[in-house]
Image 1 (tube, rainbow, N blue to C red):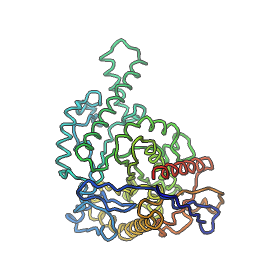
Image 2 (cartoon, one colour):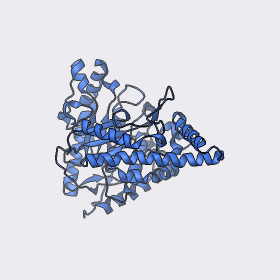
Image 3 (spheres, rainbow, N blue to C red):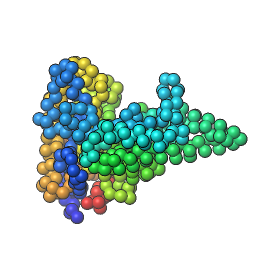
Image 4 (tube, helix red, strand yellow):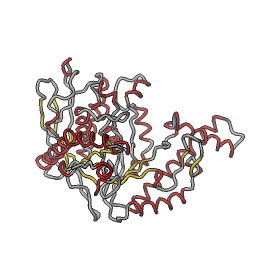
Length: 440
């Protein structure tokens, strides 16, 4: 068992004391075939930048920065493969514009046997290597497995589920209709999602499989404003909902939360708090698994999600450092087709990689590797915890207590939330560290 090393750092010109560098044990398991680099923290490129070279002559030199990318910088390949509903089986969904049922529409009416048979063919086709050891991501967005989370445009799944109950049981009350529809929907959703996870793990057992966006925290600035909240912490209601998805965490062999930033964070000094809460919730649900720990790879986009503008350096750095500091195995950098749809977009992204993202990514992975060697004897990764002693006006206006180029070793986060929110996140962090040490 690893012995925890506790080092104390004082951020320059601050009154915050940070408990730094706790070793999180990790095991490297090989199943044959190429695997991700054997290091504590990887940055994986999931952007179809091949199109930039083929169409516009704009090439990305990712190897220069030790960024992991599929051969040819394809979307899917050796190191990461992402399945959307259109290329994995016969996924039940309702067409957003026409309202037409596709493959049964709602999961209760889907033919799961036909779905898994088609999915088997799709997996063999998209991942021909039986010894595949890369990241396996299932991106399915039409509906959510919990009844209550199908709101707004997704409420059609609740409506059609209730209609199905009325057809089968015309004499039950409306209260019973909703209750029966909820049970049927959530049971079918579990069978569908659990079934596909079992299938991919059976056919490609070396991969790290999980659903993109799970777990969610529902803590965007707009969602916090809607509930009149004051902290980016996941609410107790959200945690309770995620606890009901224990079957999903048990069935996964990796977790892929979303830490995309909207451009509203350019004017808010708190993007790291948003990311911190999301990553902390991911480790919380992972820590509740009955089986062994699994890797966490948050999904990050280098552009703000509602524009083509690249992240500020501070937002990019804080997102990656938060993921690394809590013990993530890495981050996956995702890019849409729009990111590579024109020469202008390709050039702006390449320039950002060359001047800002690439140099930081290389330094970040270097520092993580050096810390793992020095403090964990090459048998773990370093994670950070922090203790709030006091805040002053100067701290509230700063994002970091040290320069953003200092890398992994000197990650020091300054909280900007209310004392209640900050205290809650600190408690989560220390509880989380306790689980890390117990698992080591």
